[in-house]
Image (cartoon, rainbow, N blue to C red; front, side, top):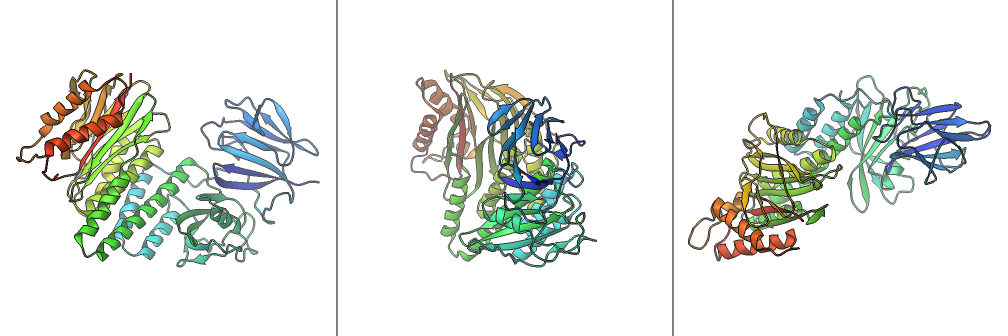
Length: 532
């Protein structure tokens, strides 16, 4: 009898390869399914894979989003040929005959893609925040690697073992070099390394989760039930080699919560490596000017490019002063079509302020990627500051989520200069927002307030570098001066002018006011224009 294999991928990561030994497999989100596929577009009972004697068929179980065979939507039951590709939401299923694809001879048969460790509770965020703080407080690179491995085998992630490996890009055998001893959970065995997982990472997959049996090392004494799934994550790469986090797992973990924890933990690890690299480089620089230039470069890289979302045109103004600081402005497109707008100011000057701003940037983008609410994001940023930095760090924040379709704005302001809305004729009002204290001091009880940006109106966020700008006579611009410039700017703008043009004009007005006086603080602002 011909043996068939099913290869299942999710996105760019190899998920599993399983041998089809039964005659029927139920696919869907429900726990009763034989192959559990966790995706937003997957129905509880989505489809059936059926053996019809000498061939296999796929049958749609009247799922909400259906299935596609070789790119074409199908209905009912359709026969499958070797090499056919079935698309089901974010999953791609490919049928192979025995030996038609290079699979490892002793590959495991798995009937679930979501046999995950216990689902993380609400406390997992605190664990990740504490982990990030420990990384940033640990100067030894080997110790930071050990912290990452310890997190993997901890109760939240539940891996059996973890270690870091180095792969050479020019090695056809993909033989790894170990970076320190593996960390093994109590009662578990030392890891055996999977060639399949490592070759997939080396081929460009950032994260690989597979049920294939390891092939490096001796695994002959293990029963099939004891063999474990493996995880490989690309951590640090250069032209010659690749540093990989490798872990063995009790089961093939595919839940979104579990993958979110792994993705966030590795992102924090990479961020900590960058922070410590920057710190060590700064120590080697004897001249203050070199440090300032590095911090300027870091700050400039945090400023996104101008972009448009629907009818909302967004542009950014940023001018660092001679001393470095921690201004951070951003606009992050969210998966539901809304846009997260952020303006922050870290207290103080110097490299530390710039590094804190860099960490806030990473945390904001992770929160946006994981569909955090605005309240949860602000609380996460606050916990990150309290847990990570060894001194009390004050950060003012103005943050909003803007819906380009309706113009609805949900906002929180943590002691940042008040954002304003300017009408097309130059009239000005403060954005309705919930007001609270700066981040970094205490746990916060916060809420949001909503407002609306109507066609033709301009929404402006700005740092105190604008309000505290001085001219040659030592006169300060102040809040009233900023408001007057914004009002005149919008009121005199001709029809069709974009946000980028308004940014250039405002920068020119500020430079004209300052004259020959040097700025004493970073100048940053965000302009969001609702086109008519």
